[in-house]
Length: 92
Image (tube, rainbow, N blue to C red; front, side, top):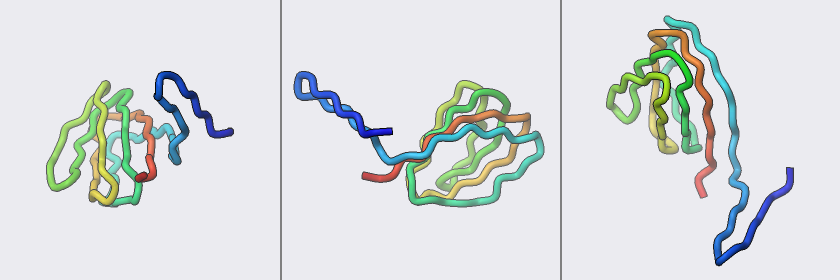
């Protein structure tokens, strides 16, 4: 894929270094604490999980969108089968 730039009224669109994926986790799965150098945006499509990020606990369900800043430690426990999409964005 090539970089796309569109100029209109001083607006510019361009690609951002990123990774995109779709994940499925069965109920009972424990995702151990981790951190990474990218900002992470996740879109919960189905299921329920209990997540800990930045020292706070969250109950996430279908329809929720999360942002985990680069370097923030996070973990999760899947309470009901989960399907989610994520985008990892390289800091600019």
